[in-house]
Length: 313
Ligand SMILES: NC(=O)c1ccc[n+]([C@@H]2O[C@H](COP(=O)([O-])OP(=O)(O)OC[C@H]3O[C@@H](n4cnc5c(N)ncnc54)[C@H](O)[C@@H]3O)[C@@H](O)[C@H]2O)c1
Ligand SMILES: O=C(O)C[C@H](O)C(=O)O
Figure 1 (cartoon, rainbow, N blue to C red):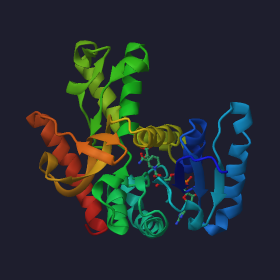
Figure 2 (tube, rainbow, N blue to C red; figure 1 turned 90 degrees about the vertical axis):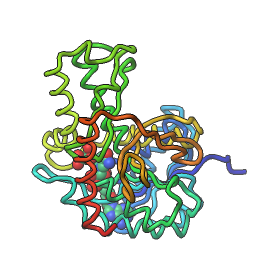
Figure 3 (spheres, rainbow, N blue to C red; figure 1 turned 180 degrees about the horizontal axis):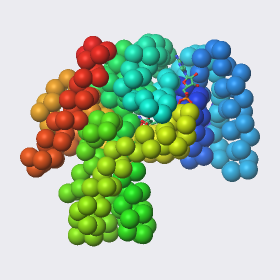
């Protein structure tokens, strides 16, 4: 008899998708289906088989299947969408909007057919707008359509704070609100190390540098890689979100959620702190913001609205 495990489909078997699939299996979060286009069926199968053959060495029990058929994704608990093109040096994420909207829409039509009860996490960029595209194409309730940006942006922010102070990343807390673009809003007032507010540990001008480096953190890696974008930290971020849902952990982490009045925005997907559990987004938290923080968030929301309007919200 087959062992009963969660089923997680990762659509797009490129850098982020393949890395995510391996990390999910290594954490034994479920059986993983890695899916790409028919033209890449053999390489996708090859990647999955190669990962599976790491399992006796690393001692994880999870099936990993490579495919181009949505039948293999049937009844998935979670579907992670990484399908689409990545930006190259000199491009903005928004330059990808038209190409990736078409890809995300077609992927979601298949997901809706084979996994109508799934919770869907979107990574493809520009991710706030792509989460909107997915929401429209899937027709799922808003709690089951979630975009990934805040975990990654917060991870970058916390990395830079830990480096600045030469302390363990484990003790750094903080988060980033807003759209996944260069005007995202790292919330300094809510950031601490070992419970100590960062503005009493780091001089203001260095905090400003950290905020700016966080905002352009994706672009920094795009420039260094030369041909493609980040994938290790994005994959780790997707895995954290998946684990929170599958284990019903009720974690409070920043994710891209559908806003209907929260923070004064309506009919918009954007990054906010949320409770993640078995039902997906179980609650969105509205924080008290200073006038300066709200102005920064409004600027970021305006950017998200502009790119979302291109694909027709
Ligand atoms: N939201 C974030 O924080 C974040 C982080 C990293 C990357 N991204 C985005 O994720 C996307 C993927 O990045 P990557 O580095 O994995 O790119 P990649 O080029 O390595 O992989 C993308 C994969 O998608 C596949 N694909 C294209 N159309 C498809 C379709 N219709 N069905 C199934 N698969 C399809 C491609 O064949 C390719 O294998 C990009 O848009 C990138 O900008 C977002
Ligand atoms: O920067 C990119 O284009 C990829 C991703 O959104 C990231 O932040 O690493």
